[in-house]
Image: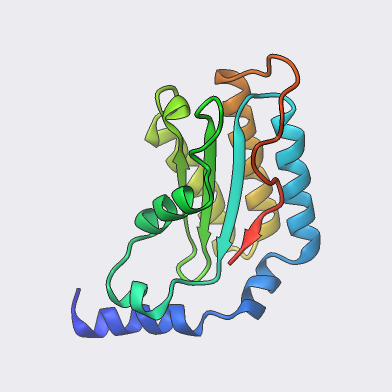
Length: 169
């Protein structure tokens, strides 16, 4: 990536604001997403965590940290990997670039392939292009819940291991 591209990317992330993030994901949307995650987790053994980040730090954007690298780092930082059944799923949204990545723990990764996760990500990015952050995110969460219900159906009561409310960074 040339200097101009690196600078442009870093600048886009630097100028991405918390106000922009709140417009895309207002309180009512965060509540609806959290409720959808909670309801879905009653039907499967998975743990879903959604993190929305307004943008990378200037240094990370300048250094070329990819959306996937950031998602994997957050997967570790927020303990999504640390569930009893190795069934954590992180949905990571980078608002500065309107990119989405899904990172699944090894228990889930064995059953659901990357092409399926990419289809879920496309649901979101296509909706984001139309300004439909609320509906696109809820549709993606519903799809993730359906996949987890199919491959990891609930088998009785279990503790909620990860917060259901989306995290805004």
